[in-house]
Length: 81
Image (cartoon, rainbow, N blue to C red; front, top):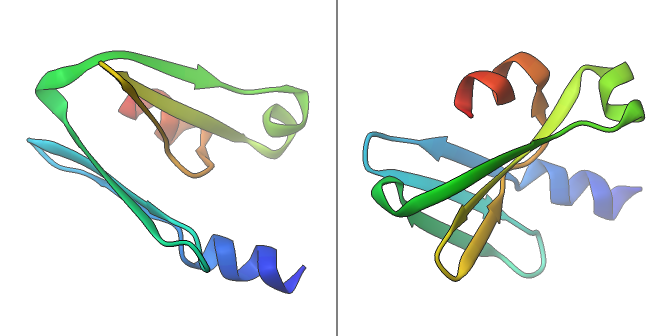
């Protein structure tokens, strides 16, 4: 539980006019930058449990890469998509 709390605490994302930046991981820090002009597809996922909690997961795809944003509120994920 403590490791999961640390992992969630060290997640973050930001969408600017030019970039999508996602950082994740506590022990293995990963920072992913994706140019918004290169985005080819977005996918909005919400299973039964996430729907009940009002959460969703947004996946952004570009040529050769895939970036998953941390869990977001369903309205916020829909607006970003």
